[in-house]
Image (cartoon, rainbow, N blue to C red; front, side):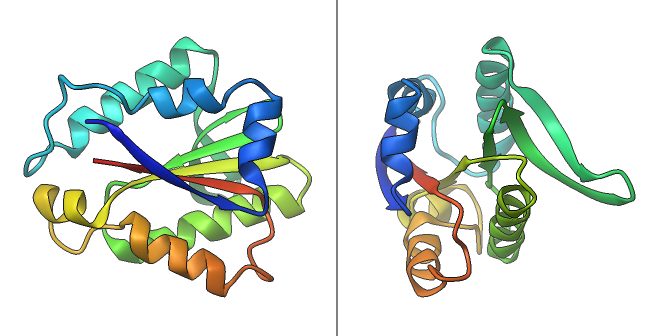
Length: 153
């Protein structure tokens, strides 16, 4: 697995740089030992969550006690979401991050997804960077949380 590129939604890159976390976050995806092949999503998730936990991030954080929705990880005023599943889950991820932002729980977020080519290698109809970045552009007045969209391959 390797880091490919980012989409900077509402100046999120500057926020991650300001906190001195941009390089750390993108480096999580520089892991040549993880090969992109069918059904490798468990290996990707295990690696990413281990890296976040090593830095003190809380994992699988509930949005609300009465609803079964979680975000992959949080730390201070930041949230991180990893999406290696079906494309239909990506809008929920954006909605969860926006909810955390509007409720004052976070100031910035990151969402990591495979590139379109990578998504095709590891499964079918998976969330991918190219589609999500276009949707973030389209809904820029609706999804206002600064999101660093990370592409890996």
